[in-house]
Length: 140
Image 1 (cartoon, rainbow, N blue to C red):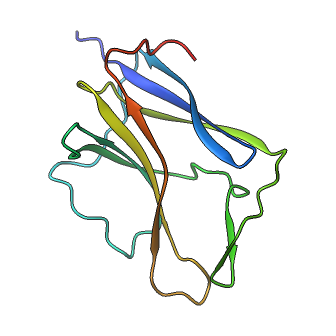
Image 2: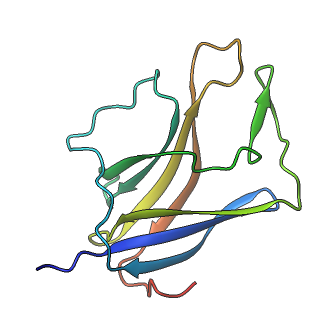
């Protein structure tokens, strides 16, 4: 039987900053992503997703995530961006992805409505992280 591995990525939100704090391999099957070829993300979709992009910028893995960012990370009111994150709030979350083939970028996106009266969604890129296949993925 083939051993399946995944890459567990731990992100930290502290002092209004989102960053990757740890990446390590695990002997567990990776979560299934969407089937290729990938359809464009429709404007009617609200939520978060993660994508792995190869060196050419092509998406090689996409998976939608459930409640990945804590509610206090970003709050918007009356179609005006207002930051309600407190400086002393710290939070972590983890994302499990397949072990990438070669170097790639991981991007965490969110698509949301800017305010209750808005009809057009807005797409945000929360973080883009370069994952190098040569790096030691066991250290924090």
